[in-house]
Amino acid sequence: MRLVSWNINGIRRPAAGVGRVLEALGADVVCLQETRVTRDLLDEPTAIVEGYNSYFSFSRGRSGYSGVATFCKDSATPVAAEEGLSGLLADNRGAIGCYGDTEGFTEDELRALDSEGRAVITQHRIRTSDKREKTLTVINVYCPHADPEKPERKTFKLRFYHLLKLRAEAILRAGSHVIILGDVNTSHRPIDHCDPSDPVRIEWPHLCLFLYHLSEDSSLSSNCQSFLTENISIHRAVECIPSICTTNPQLGNMT
Image (tube, rainbow, N blue to C red; front, side, top):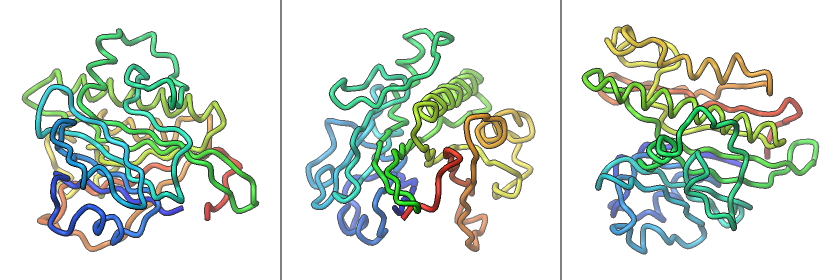
């Protein structure tokens, strides 16, 4: 199974057409972030692409803001799909479940965290290298940005990270492999950032701890990080962030 993650910075009417873009990427599952489209502005050619199933999450409060979408080839059609992390937006007919212990959140807070269109979860059946059938859960996220001039957004970002961690670990406990990918809006290490002296990184280093908590502190699984090696200049990229692949110990190479 081939997965691609891309912050597209606006999905409406790409010059080549969404279908041609998806085919050019050559992936079974394509996870897009910052789609910047609301439900009322999503047109049919964007949402319905021959050979694919699409799943969107929209911002409820602002137009042209945030949003994620996951496109799955018919051959990789998920057995379940869900919008958001809290479960409050889930359709019971296709809900994935496994929400973790969210007693530390109020219902209003959970709704606020899911109101910006920042997560879509799809669950797939895969066959591992030893020919066993397993469940793979793909969590496509566009994590919040922490604006130094808005302290409340730092709190929002950290609470989003915590909810994401709770959800991923709950799904792991249920026996599924989990891949979190997308725009995490945090650099894992200084080398992953185009400007390691970035004042936000220096003043709020704990924002990066979320990645370490998933990749080093979890007792639920073994973990790996997948890196794309490419020549990236400061003019071409703001951040270079590794996807996080979280699996159960028995996972082999997926084909």
